[in-house]
Image (cartoon, rainbow, N blue to C red):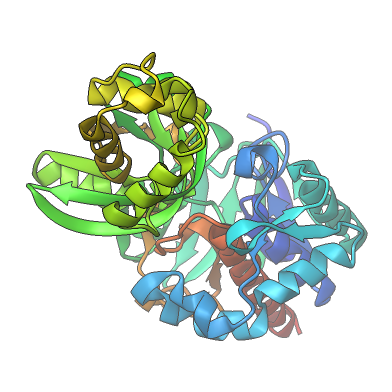
Length: 424
């Protein structure tokens, strides 16, 4: 058997996703000799498919406290890291390197090119210019530790020693991109507490065929109420997308974990309110005003001018109405039934899509076991952690990547300082 190549660095980063690339770039710019170890042939495999290939780089919430609150109760852990690297810093980083950005609805930030490749190019160019050694097609097969320190990590062909290590191996969402939970197994053996990963942002399958027929239809402002055992529960407003299997879109992704948990306990339903800013009385007034200038039109055509034509057809079918009847002959009961459906369109969720379709996963390393001023492990003195490996609930909208940029930056900087000091 051939002897493994011995490699020695100040900092070894394991995982070449966004957090890993940011950590490696930062550590190198601090003067450390850095190696970035990646199991895939190329870096950032998942990054290239985020946001449907457009890459929602961050969320333009520039108040750090407001940004932290987007992550729920656990957001308090991010206040210190955000003070060191904010959403504004992320935008400045990419824009100053020739990648202009644009801010869309709900403060979602994308590259102007509408291509994740632009984000990838900036990061890879920075790695090259910073002198980071990239070791691709090199899954880590062994980690050697002694007491509370990592001594080295092994791939099939190399043994890599370093003064400090940064784990940025991601969660369990989209395992085909390399996020297969390797880091969780290693960290558990090293003494860390791991919250069981589960899908967090994932589309939902629905029972009703009519919702599948609306595939591709996007509605920007819908209120969805989760009805659990006939009790009205969580309600949110946002954008949804009908698919061939059910529902997706930012609002659905952000509610998916709650819906999934509720489904484990009992049968649940989703109530869609297509005009959340109007009650039934005001909606009826709005519809009557619309119909007043369409008296000689057929009901199907007239309603298609009030809501999406495809949705109008579904609503009339569900209400048992006649699309061919002229508006001037439309019974009041038919109009009121339509208003009721628009305010309370019911769907039955029958499952979440599998982990490979999830945007991110929840679960990960217990946050209490990390010093968030440095992103250093409180179990292993020369280990730093960043990115999706951390146990945060990440809403859709650029918030997951912002954790990667921020924690990657802080981890890389402190791992470098630790490594250089140790070397000296």
